[in-house]
Length: 345
Image (cartoon, rainbow, N blue to C red; front, side, top):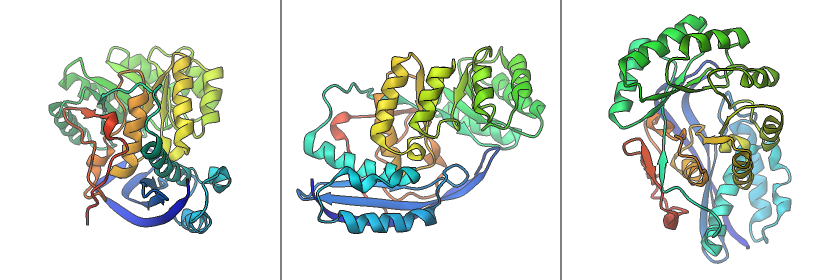
């Protein structure tokens, strides 16, 4: 494959209201859309958008990297040398791999060994907000068909977290599943306290309740509520270590923060081979980056809800949403992947 054109388009998306968790606040998303064209005229799109407070690299740091890569790639035969330095910029690796994989699929078709889910369940998400706001938000999510709700916890007092979750659970059907995400703000004692007071509620798992890797592993061996890993998984090697050394059952993967889409596919297969469960989740990508997450979610064999609803927080987007959420689910047609995007002016 020869790269004939390489365009990088800066974008900015504002949120309707700031999204707050226990570690950071997001009011906008900033990044680059890369459009790569091969010698046959096939076009692939990818999104590069470091997440402030989560990604190690910044938007400012990736701009010169992409400029340099563009100069070296145009007119050249694609080879692995182009990506040697991208491991230090996983958001760039994600966007480039999304665009190039799209071209590869247009040229060669889907892998016949891949099995796809055509219906992808999605969890609703509640940022850190007042109890009354949270109750109103959950009510709307339930009315819109969401069966799994992710609640951001990690307030200064653990009692406030417990009161919030109990209030929500008491007001809605016992069939609703809850995921509690503390973003590492609890310690072991707080986690055990929460488990004791919430074990009778339909909590699917506690997501990254503690920050330290060793503490997470320790909790996974004896918690009555399952433990999920999120921030502890920055790379594929992190996940492999966790598979080998822990009893963690849920692996929450953020592909746009981890990097290569090919590595994400390999990691999904590895985790499932070990009879653990994968959740694909968003880092507030635009509709373009999110399309790759939908593709990865379709490859996951379990029927659990994935974290793909963050775009509902956007006041604008850069392209048509080709995978809208309807009744808490996304329809995925493998024959229509990779999608063609209608850009919004």
